Image (cartoon, rainbow, N blue to C red; front, side):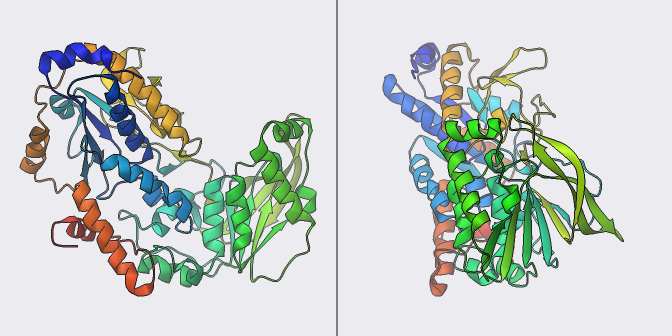
Length: 468
C-alpha cells in the first residue's frame, strides 16, 4: 500500500491528509490502522484521522454485540486499543451522524470520509405470526443483555419453552444466554438490570431450528462446543437430524471447520442424555413456516420437515410439526440501516460501492466517500474479515487522493469548535479511559473485571475529567 499517489495534494497544502471515519467499531478502527500503516511509505505530514462514534464508548459490536460470556472475543479490544492510542487518531464519541453532523459539513473539515457503520438491526423474516407478542429479533435481545443505552432496561422472560430460529453464532449466543442461569453470567460485565432479568428467566427448554443440515450450519466449532460447558445446560441432538448428501460431504472435505462442527453434532447425537436442568435442543431439517398465536401472543411454532436434495440444499417434505413454545427469537441475520446523504441498496442492506468507493445509482462515484465493513459487503464473515475490507478501501482512497477537492477547514480544531458551538456533548479517547476505569471500579468489590454502565448520561458523566 502506498500514499505516494496523494503527494500533489499534500505537497501543495503541506498538511496531513484529513480523514473522517464514521463508526468506531472494528471496521472503522481497522481502516484507521490501515491508513496509519501506509505512512511509512511516504515522507511528509502523513494522516490525521477522526473516528466518529454514535455511542459514548468505542468498539461497536465488540461492546454491544458480543455475548458477555465471551471474554476471548472481547480480547480483540486490546488490539483495537493500540490503534486508538496512536497520536494520529482522535475519537469523537456520542456524535450521531445525520443529526449532530452531516456529510456536507464533514467535507469542510476532511479530505475524505469513510463510513463503517456496520449492521445492528434484525433482518426480516416474513412468515405468519412474526408480529405476535413474544416474537423477538435477536439483535434487540443482544442489545438488552449487552447493556445498550438506547433499549429498554427490562426484557420479558416469562416463557418456559423458547424457540431460536437460525444456525449462526448469534443464534447460539441467544440460545446460550437464555439457557444459562443469571448466576452463571453474574461474573461477566452484565449490569444489574440484566442480571436481575436473567435471574428471573423462566426458560428451561430452548429449541434452536435450522432448515438445512449439520454440514450447512454456520456455527464456528469453538462457539458450538461452548454450549456443552455449562453445568446447567444439556445439549440434545436427535440422531435422525444427522444426515449428509453429496454436497454436504463435499463441504466437509473442503472445510475443516465444517467437518469439526459436523463431528461435534454427531458425537452429541449418539451420547446418552444427561440430567442437567436446562435442555437446549439443536434441530436440523426443520424450516419455520408459521409462528402460532392465541390472543395476540405466541403459543407455538410450526415447522416443515425438509430433506437434502443432493447438492447441500433442501426441499420441503410436506410434513409439519407444531412445537410448544411461548417465545420465538429470530436470528436470521443483521441488517444495516440507511445512512443520510448516501445511496442505499435496501435489498442487500449495503451502500452501493465498488471496492469501497461509494457509487451513485447511475454508477458514478461519490467524491471522496468510502465504505468498509458490513455496510460495504453485508453482515457476513467474522471480525477478522473486516481487515481485508479496510485494506482494500484504504488503498483506493489513497489512490484517489490526488483528485480530492480537499477540506476548506482542515484544522483539527475547526471541527471541535463546530461541535462545541452546536453544544454537542462529545466524548474523547481520554474520556474512554476514565469510563473504563469507572466500570472496572464498579466490578472490583464483587471480584468482577468490570460492570458495564448502561445509561448514556452516566457514561457521559464518567467520561468527564475528575468524574470517574
